[in-house]
Length: 376
Image (tube, rainbow, N blue to C red; front, top):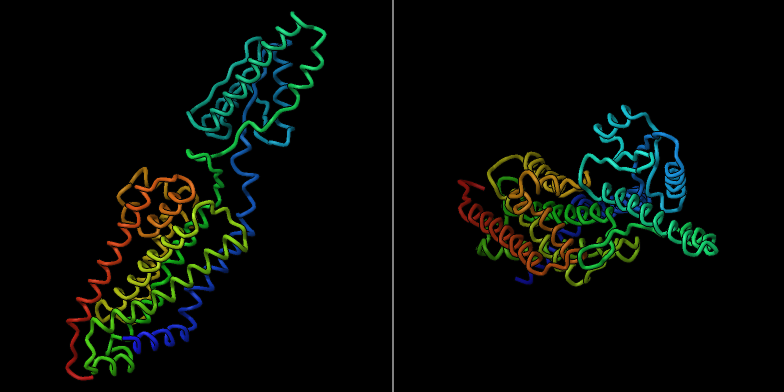
């Protein structure tokens, strides 16, 4: 067994194309992610387009417009104000070009088209202004000598919004891409698994032909190949996770041990997929690689690798897909570690991944066990 394992190590490590896709490509892609989207967190979410419709001129309207100008020019960049006519503002709101409309008259009002975080922020701004105006009125009536100090204090606006999880951890929306990247790296273990499976296909390679005529039990060969490539690929994904966390400084706030546990089970999924596809049927090598690549990239796409929020869209319209998609399960497990702090959901994801991996390995074994050749 150790002898088989040793040569599986050597064979896999010398397979440069498979090692490139399983190790170097995710690291290169992660580096590109870091320099393109990893620094965008200051610019996303914070700026909310809002329309202002001016009514009759009044002191209240002037004060509120000055308030909005102060907010817009502050360092928080929460809103960007567009002055419009009423019809144009209504059309912009309907087409989601703005998130709300402030009507500035004697009575300031806000109109929104939906209920969401951005609309809640606009409502909070209006409430903040109304409360501040009432307080300034009371100060002017009771302690007019303190009016200047009150105005100075009110001008020091603080950041009104901070994105945190239910457990109080900060959320960086761009981290989802790196979770999906790790999931893709796990799935790319299929290339190593595929290479191992080729070693069992006597009709494809001379090496497999020689192995098939040996008296060694097929299960022993499969287990040694599986163990060898799984150890190698787990090391590959671990290098990627450590690179993202400690070299690029991606904000993985959860326990590193649990993240490596997810990476290990995710690696098993990728390797199992490669062994299953490599063992299935007598298709050509290129066709099997195409199937494998299509499955891994589709799973990665649905987990949010290319489009942020894709996993949420799938959850809304086809939640069963997220329950069975290995890449989505891996990213969800990372969310449980770093954001949700939900052990039940975390272990459910790991359990589902483990079952999927075992089923694929069992399928590969059943296929290989029945393989026979009239002549080699």
